[in-house]
Length: 479
Image (cartoon, rainbow, N blue to C red):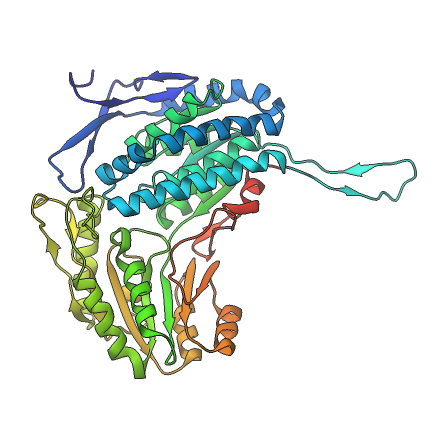
C-alpha cells in the first residue's frame, strides 16, 4: 500500500488505473530539493508487462480497423485537452525533471505542435498506384500498422519524446505499451491520463512504470510485441537493439550525441556566443542535441571564449519554477557525479578549466543537483571531454586553423546527431553541409531544436532505424 495521503501514480492497463502486481512503489523526488518526495509511482514488473501487452493485443483488431481519420479524431480531442493543461504539464516538468519554467513551457508547446501535425496524418496516410505489366490488372500499395508497439523513453524530454512516438503509433493503427523513465513518472501519467480523457478505447494505450530491467527487457523480448521504439543511452539502446532485432522485431533507437558548432573567422561572434551558451547550458546540458564542442578558428577563439564565459557566468541557478531562474538542476545525484567526474578527467588530461566545474548550492535548493556552467579551453580532439557524451552543462572549446581541420575534428567522433556552423561565407556553408556527418545541421543557429514537420535523427552511433517526427514518423509504425 502507498503511504496514506501521498500522491500516487498507477499503471494504466486495459483502460484501468491499477497498482503494480508486486504492490511496490518508487519515489518521485525533486532534483532541486532531493529530500522532497513529490509522489509515489507503481513499480511494475514482468507480470504487469504481460498484462499490458495482452490488453494491447486484444484491442488491436478493432483499432486497426478504425478508419485513420477516425483514429486521428482521438488525437485532436487529446490536443484540445493538452492545450488546457499546459501549465500543469510545465509545472510537472519543473518539479520532477528540473527544467526552468521557460524551458518547460517550450517543451510543452513543441509536444503540442507534434501532436497537431501527426493528427493531420490521419487524412494523409496513403499508398500509391503503379502500372502492371499484365492486362486487366490493377496494382496499388497501402500502409498498415505493425501491431503492438513498445515505446521506451528517457527522462530529459519526458513529455515531448513520448508524444512524438505515441502519436504516430496510434494514428497508424497500432496499440501501444509505454514504459517511461522512472525519474519522470508524473509527466508520463499526465500524458496517458489526457489521452484516456479524450476517450481513447481501452487497451489502445497502456502505461507500465518501473525499472528498465523487469519492464523494458520483458517488453523487448515479448513475442507479441512487433516493434520497439527507444530513446536513451548508447549502452542500453545497443543492448535493446541486439536483443529485439535477433527476434525479428522492428527496432528504432535514438541515442547519444557529441554535437559541434564550427565558428569561422568571419562569423558574427555575438550571435555565435549566444547560440553556444544556449546549446551548451540550456536544460543544464541534458539534451541529445546539446552543444558539446565549439570548434573555433584560432584568430577569433579568444574573443569568442570571453563572450561565452560571460554568458555562462551570468546564468542564475535556483528553483526551476521561478521565472528568473536560467539554470536548473541535473536530474539526480548519479548525473551530478557523472558530470563532476568528467570535469576531473578533463583537468587530468590537461584541458584548462576556464569557468565553472563546481557544484552549486543556490538559496532554497542547497541540496539540489546543480553544477555551474563549465567551459574548458585548450582541448585536444582526442581528449575524452571532446569524444564522450557528458550530458551536463560542459563545453569543450577546440581551436583549429581552417574549415578542413574543423570538419575533421567535428566528424572525428562516433556520434552524428546535430551540428552547426557560424560564418558569412556561402561557399563554406555548402562545403560544411556536404561534408558534415550528422543527421541534422544548422547554419547560423544553435545545434538544438527541431520542428514538428521535419524528420529527427542521427547517423553513426547516434541511432539505428527510421527517422522520427515529420512525414517520416509514420514509416516506422507501418508497413
